[in-house]
Image (cartoon, helix red, strand yellow):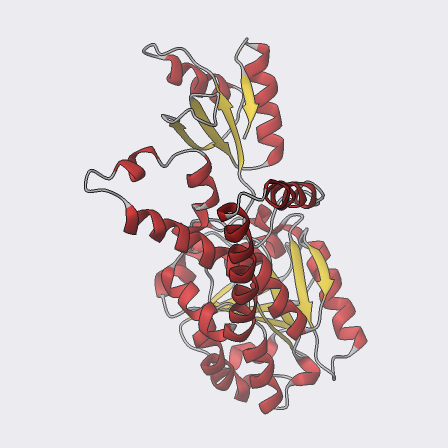
Amino acid sequence: MNNETYGFIGLGLIGGSIARAIKEKQPTSRIIAYTPHKETVDKAYEQKIVDLPLYEIGQEFSECDYIFLCAPVECNNDNIDKLLPFLDKKTTLTDIGSVKTGIHEKIKELSLESQFIGGHPMAGTERIGFGNSKSSLLENAYYILTTTESTEKERLDKYYDLVKMIGAIPLVVDHNRHDYITAAISHVPHVISASLVNLVKDNDSEDQLMKTIAAGGFKDITRISSSSPVMWQQICTTNADNISELLGKYIDSLYEIKLAIDEKETDKIFDFFSSAREYRESFIETSSGPIQKVHSINVEIDDQPGCLASVALLLSENRINIKNIGIVHNREYERGTLKIELHDNASMEKSIEILADKGYNVYKK
């Protein structure tokens, strides 16, 4: 596997992170990449992530052992057509999309089922683009592999090992089941999040008091609404049946709890929240997923000049990289006044230890 050639069509956050991880774990590998944005592949070449930058899809891709389709979903089918004349039988063709049915149908239409394995790295951040990619993004993230009826075991085993090599956790799932699962755990939650934000927007007063005090819990559960509207438009149209079915079930459950609240049925209301809490607390903690975990803490500080800077300096001196920092103005549900977001769980735990040792009251968020 050490001297294999990897091709990338598109090199954004996920594609760039996969390329970086491969180069880090397998320095002797060869990576070629095409993107319509010349500056992106040039930057990747300058950073020694890409060995051969390309400005069109051509013969060079015939040398690849793997080709990753990392362009936006609506571009993948066109890119496959352009790639087809240069696709060698040895090449494993894969993608990184969060909806699989459409590309599997395209692959079947072109009789490429024996060499295609769908891929969905369930990782990401609120930032996009190659400039924000990093090799560690995929560490401990589930990486879904979707096979076809003609997928060869040897090809699947090699791809499975590649995913493990870059630090992710491979799972083999039928592509139809994949689309239903991601609709439930990612696509529908994004729709709900956006609807909650719009609920506040549409019902706020002229002085925007709701917006002013929408801190804490509301901001946390609607954080994913900051994602790209174009991307979610595409997801909703390509996975429409699954999203619509699950939204219908969600609407039914909302109506049931609405009736319980109207009738003040205390047992039903309690069971509604109790069952959700019990199930939520049974979740396995992983560092990555379709909806990213936030590693944040709240720190009580005095309302005095320099206190915020002191906390930031203390963490900086201990080589803790702060992702985001801000004051929490609404304390209805929060005891802390300073919210600090870190990049990973290890940084969060170390920050808690450092700050507590200096006498700060620190709470996990």
